[in-house]
Image (cartoon, rainbow, N blue to C red; front, side, top):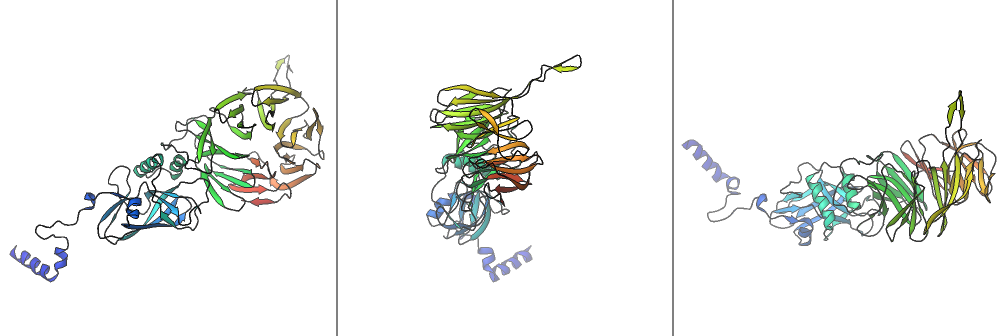
Amino acid sequence: MRTVLFLAAIFALLTPGVFAQNTPSPGEKGPPAFADLKLVLLRQAAADGRVKVGGINPSGYRRVTLKIENRGDQRLAVDLCGSFLRPKKKGSCQRLGLGPAITPQATLKLSAGTIVVHLEPGEKKSIRMNTVCLDAGRSCPGSQSFVISPDALPAVREKVMRWWADHPDVPQGAVNSAIWRFSETVRITPGTAVNYTTPKGSFAALHGGTYYRLTDGALSCLDTDGIERILGAEMFSVLPCAGAVYGVALSDTGTPELWRLALTGEQPWGRVMPVGNGLRVLEVIPAGSGRIGVVTDGGLFIRDLAAGETKSYFANTQILDLSARAVSDTRVLVALRVPGQGGYYQGGERKGSTSDIFELWTLDPRRGEPELMKRFWNVSAMSIGPAGVFGLSHLGVLRKIKGKSFKDFGSGAIYKQILAVGKSHVWLQSEKDDLVVVNTKTGTAKKLEVIVDDSFAGDIDTVSDDLAFTNDGKFYRVSAKTGEVIEQ
């Protein structure tokens, strides 16, 4: 035992720093353990000059590398949660809220809702972080660098971020959806509403030259300058119209609701109205001053945005293929199909069967009271758009209402269905499943090298008449004037 102590003493004399480094002199206190340090918020430490911090190498709005340096002579325990980065060039892209770290063991949790990094005096660290976008509608980060903001997040958003710190495995999209909708709750389970579970698939929409892309619930847009902007997450549809962008998402309780996107302010998505279980919203249209029309597969809703009141029309299970268009502040035209009766068999013969009937209605969105204008038996399809009311004969010939009656229109070609009606063009599926655009002024038809199958879903830009659609997960835009097909 004496030999061991003797050797240790000699080693300590030769290399005093090894043993004396953390050994205080009698009466002195050593450096505090990190667990004993008082947590300091990242934004506060940066404002005080205790740390230098910035962000680089963003992966869109979902990831960023945080560079942090302790500039003082004291150990620090810094809480990253609740702070956010802004681009060095203000407004050049979205701001990023800091979430759980990706870099292994780069941070610790000292208490609930914290993301803590320990720094020795002068120490520098580089940490890959999960982030959320705080600005739906601004351009997506590309090669920008970021600085720390001295501002605090709104309380409802900081609550979500601290919840994420405690649940780091929750998908980023679910967290960002709560951030964009200013919700305190992150919805992490599928919805309970009929036909609304987890958003899947690719969908496209187009309005005013801006192309909207929806992929498995993640919504982005490509504006006329080619700038991509991230707009939302966990969305089931995107419904742009004049002056606004709408979409369907689930509430915190899992029921579908119509939301409106505002491109200014801290709360980008605002709740408009509930959507009945099992209903699909097909289109949102202006319906006079301060009102919108919500076209669904179960009827038409007129929503007074100022009063917050909704009135329902044509909500009948026997009404199908509803389309609508406001022609003035006091008049909305509505087309619909009433399916025929199957009849009954008597003596081996079917009797009492009737054909489908198409009806044209007019509605004053202020007062309600829809009025039936006319019934039609001589068409197999009918659709309304800015260019008027179009239909298909039972043989598939394109027809248009002139006065109060349908007249054949165009070349007499045979079509399977009307896809969309614009200001001066109609998009159709041909007898051989080709995509065809017909000029409503001249009747000239143009066939495109695009196949329309059962999965085809197109959306018309009511400003340019161009068509947006998806195929095999890719997004396309078709020019109404030239027929050019452009991948977006």
